[in-house]
Image (cartoon, rainbow, N blue to C red; front, side, top):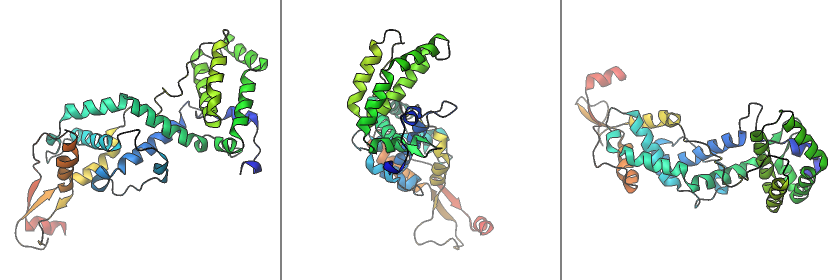
Length: 299
């Protein structure tokens, strides 16, 4: 509990989502959680990602902000196209349409909204002082609005202004770094007390001696750029290469057998992909003849 931890203003000031290499660990955690949501979407989960378990955090993220089924379908369809499988599943998909729709989702406002929602949900527990084992959530639970007031009092103090100006003048602090750090501050204030963000922003704008600051709280792309399709390659290849024997036929049969590969992938394309206008109307070349002698070698 927060009352059992030593909460200090200096620790709160130092809490940052950026690691020593400048990477935003909350953004990385957000992308990981986002992809879990994609993989557990019903339209793709049973066919491609049945081994993926739903993250409990999913229930805390709004469904209406983002079109999860369409993104999941388009993302998997895009990966199928890039794989160029031997059964011609890729030829069943409209490449230009899929890439255009994916690009529109990556660049659209809902992408930023869902990124902001996931990012701010994870931030309080992910951003932590490892030495003191104190995270932002501890400050939120210990009267967040009071800690926001203390942060405000700090940045409006003469000492803070002198220290910041000194670093800027000596070239130890760039305008870009200043803007970055002020937006880290805005996120903290938003989580501690949302009503404190605008006064803080307006105060910093009024300080003519300081660089102009941009309020990126709700406009930043917290999820970053497109996801790499190769991250799901193994799961999709497994679904594509999954053989289906004819019903009521044993592998021990002496006859030649007609085996169909990726039956569920075919169904995914003619149902889910078709619903979004991604299907070309073509059929796959996924039927293969299995001879008894070949099956013996595999046994």
